[in-house]
Length: 425
Ligand SMILES: O=C(O)Cc1cc(O)ccc1O
Ligand SMILES: [Fe+2]
Image (cartoon, rainbow, N blue to C red; front, side, top):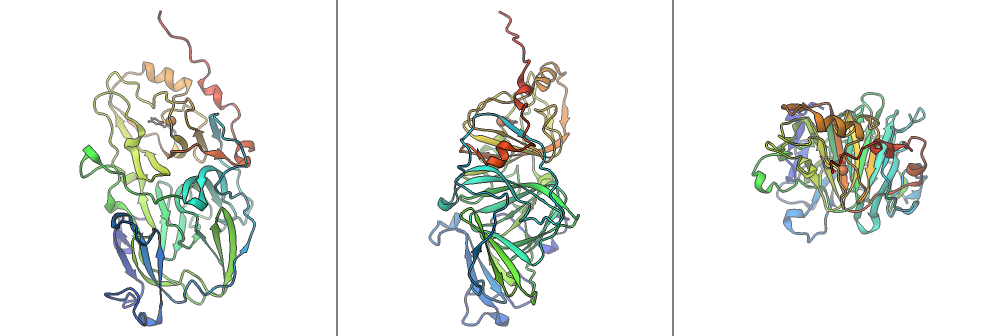
């Protein structure tokens, strides 16, 4: 999406935004007039408790052609390869894991049909924890719309753009950009490139926010003004639409006699947004040592952080420049959007992923260790790829399909074999 053209967007993270697709559709000075303008129905969508402190209070007001309440009962539909928290299909596993990309889906797979869950933690019913999903689709969603009551969804496209037609308007996210759909917001995924593939972080807990900057100062990392919120756009007279909702980990569907993407105007701060990772202002060491990757945090929440490894200069003196060996209390799922990652010489490929659970020992593979321990330390541009991490405070328990899948690399441990005893004593 051309993020340079702001006319179709309202910029700013956490702002109170407003938009109307038809002039006069947004009531002025009140949210719920006796009769909303243009014969629309007023509806509030809350993303936090009513009494939440102002700084974290989230809600939007939607002015729609028909109220969301006008629908028949939901009934359970098949979950396919989608799973929800609590994750109890396998035992929490201390082993380091890595996967190749998912196999191509059969023709006619839309976004919902192609969802595949790797694992997660917490409990959707208690609004805590997160899940790692992968999506792959080769068919647009037609006559159906999706919404997730369990949490917000962070899209990390890896191949092909996704056009997210939401209740708030349309966002197109290409590889290198990320898009967020808040809890409960309905959307349809269309595929401008014919097919798409990527990663999806589902956050059951409090919503993702910008990190504090502390001594960094007023600027740096992701800038609030680079987050783009769509302009209102609505559809009318569509005929029946199947609305699929993810609730308590399962999929439910109801056939509405109209599209729920019929919002003509809205205002509020519980809104979808788009962010171009190339806008991330990467900070790092200009003296020595490899900084902890928290310096690359784009968005943070109690259940999960989203971290990007974007192109940057490495200038550390007397420093082992790639990620160091480590064992963390946090658990790390990593994916690759393009190119290569500086801690891994091979095996970690775009569309694939790795999981280093709580306290699992990992870091540079053998080849990377040997190369970086002897490299000449001149200023070096690390621009061979774009990687990211979903970092969570609880271990990630795998789904059975992720543990048993053909595309899980059974020999991953070998990348740390052959690290010699170099002890000089
Ligand atoms: O590659 C990883 O494992 C992620 C990571 C990166 C880094 O720069 C420092 C620590 C860390 O966990
Ligand atoms: Fe790590």
